[in-house]
Image 1 (cartoon, rainbow, N blue to C red):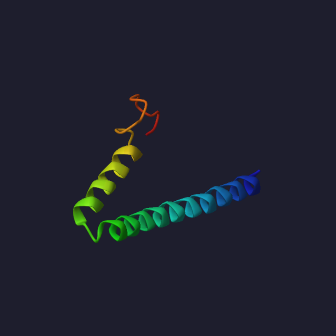
Image 2 (cartoon, rainbow, N blue to C red):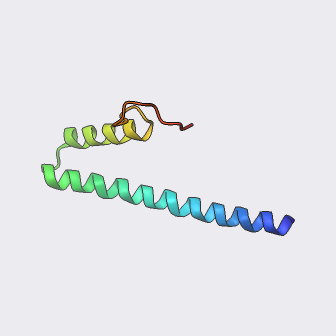
Length: 70
C-alpha cells in the first residue's frame, strides 16, 4: 500500500511540475508577443497582464458567475 501511494504522489508531483512550467512559458510567450505587436508598450503589457490575472482568479469570468476555485 505504501509503495502505491508513493508512486501516485510522484506521478502527481511530476504532473504539477510540467503544468507550472507550461503556464510559465505561456505567460512569457504572451508577454513577448504583446511587446512585439505594440512596439514595446509597457501600458499594453500591463493591461494584458492585469486581464490575465483577473481571469485566473475568476473576477473576469465571461459568464459572470464566480468560479468554484480556491
